[in-house]
Length: 464
Image (cartoon, rainbow, N blue to C red; front, side, top):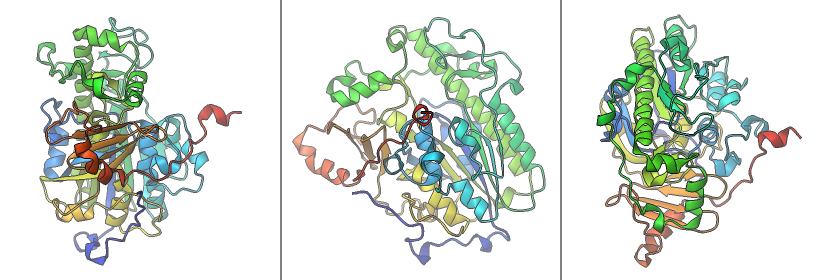
């Protein structure tokens, strides 16, 4: 059954009073990364890109090693994070569904900080595309975009279109939007602020197209690029609903990538290069915070909106309910609360960001509709009993329930998948049709949403 949790139901024993550790209300540095999967150092993945700055942040804070998105697409994921409500509740399932016209009275996370006297500043991609400039959320908002975008494709052997391109672009760093976004954040942190602030900094890379300066490609020589494990018959035990989603959203001309290994190898090289490029920008912002007057009184949270496939389960891009689309990096560093180098292996959701930050900053008038749970108990004790799985929704009526051991998927038509991560981390064996696991499915199914909101109007529908 679906559960709605009020922010402070955990009780007074779990309340946090940062005033004992710091004389003022804490600031918040809220760093978002787009389309970054678990190929990052803090998650100790053997396929990890080089991420020294994210590694350093994790060493100074707490990593949630089993963190999952609410939806594996930009707009529904970010809408869920910033409103505290899942797609199944709001009806925001797609990238072209404007959320503010559909929910004019919703109080977003940065909006709540504004209403509590904070200066709310947004830089780069926090919401999705043009919805970033939501006037109720920000005192100040600045957009940066992708920056340089070559007229001709860089990847000449892949017949893609639009954003389906990758490769080194030899241009000065300020030609890239994310570099300028970090520069603006550095400037903000170097200036005196007359009130506590919520600073959202959103980086676009490693979102397609995978463009960044050549020096990041030099980190990954082609003959050393680690390719994901792919099983040739992996989709044979996938139900039709799962196959249809995978085929529809795995990128144009995927078969050519699959049959010509060098194309996929270059894409993977470019993806890792873009992660390292973003890591450098994260480092610039964190260095500015370290050298600012706000270093000891600023909560840092870094998250990715969802994951990304690069060949696993014969899929390229996102939009699935499988592990590669859903697992994300989540790091908190909270002065006086988190211990350096801490890892919590409990299963958490990005829906938990809103109630966690509201509790840590002791905000008032917190919406009662929040569906996540404050992670403060796991900051006090990373191995605290935590029986809650993470639920991910991919389009209307399709959901995955991820516990510490299991992933259970149920599609709108009733098709199912079940994977035992203790023995099958690649999700190669679907156990859903094995009667021996009927009770496992029953236990996990109780967490599925009991209602599915109708699709919110799409952009084109609003024009007519």
